[in-house]
Image 1 (cartoon, helix red, strand yellow):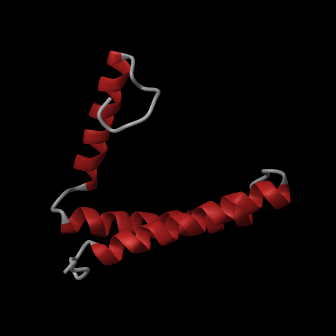
Image 2: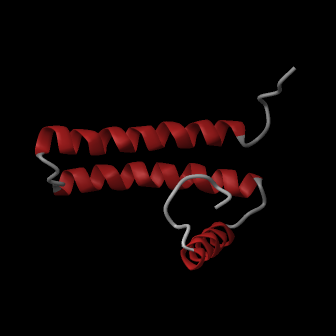
Length: 94
């Protein structure tokens, strides 16, 4: 039986939901406004980004990771890919 009561399940689903809301707002800016981001749009995107950040922080907290640690690890990964000429392409292990 699969358990869905792990503490990262709720914030992970919340992150995906909020990222989708952010993407929907961006889509509508390009669909309806020619890609022009108004001050009101910017404010709405800021609120959605705040929700994304909150859920991301919750996941990191549950995994006993700081956002700084996550960011530094990502930079190391990207610089390694750049040095090896594998910045483009697909897959985590490149």
